[in-house]
Image (cartoon, rainbow, N blue to C red; front, side, top):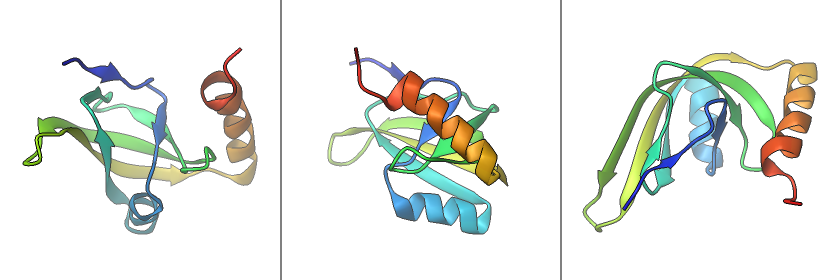
Length: 105
């Protein structure tokens, strides 16, 4: 058992519904499999399931637990700081693809 650390400027959503709720209501939750450590109190870039940068969010809580099905999960609560402009999204998406999401050499 161990903790997997998220890079402190990336918050990638796996669910379109979770991302929609954040963008629509300004607050939201994200569920991740496994124990993960998120930088509570820091601003990070939020990415869509297809790796496109869309917003700056504030991580307000990160709760790692073992659920009733005996699976390790982490729930992350987020506040929307602001949506990115088209230009910001384009640049951050290109950088993230090169640094995190692209092919491993």
